Image 1 (spheres, rainbow, N blue to C red):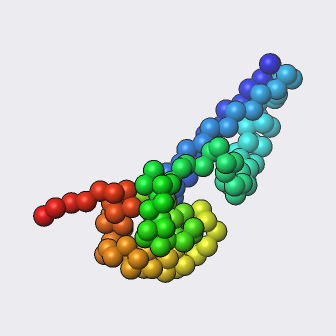
Image 2: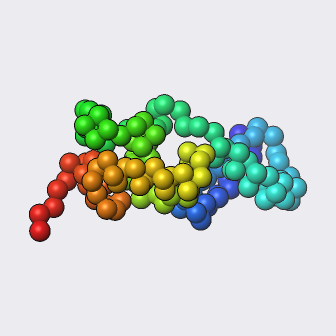
Image 3: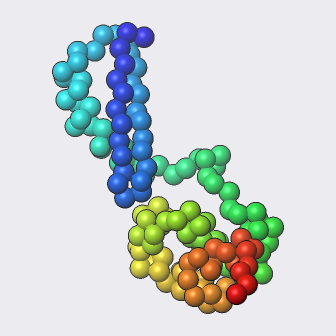
Length: 136
């Protein structure tokens, strides 16, 4: 390896940071490369964020959902998927972007989830799915 370029990107919406490392066996002129990186990296970063996660990269649902509580609550696969993102603290618009649906559609799913779980807010829904109860 004779040359290397490192470039960082920060997604202000999703609070995600990415570090891109480019290596070459040839010497890369610094100025044209720097200019090209500044122009191309936002496009490359945006394109890579559109790629679906590989199965081994996906976070598993909470253990309670994997053992069948979803059936007891009557949640659909999409509702379980949305609740997984809610449990990670994502907003409706962020979940919509991740799942390629509108924030309004996520809101509608959340209303149905609240009805099925007999809860009034996101925190109660996450707690109920994870088997956490509060007295008082």
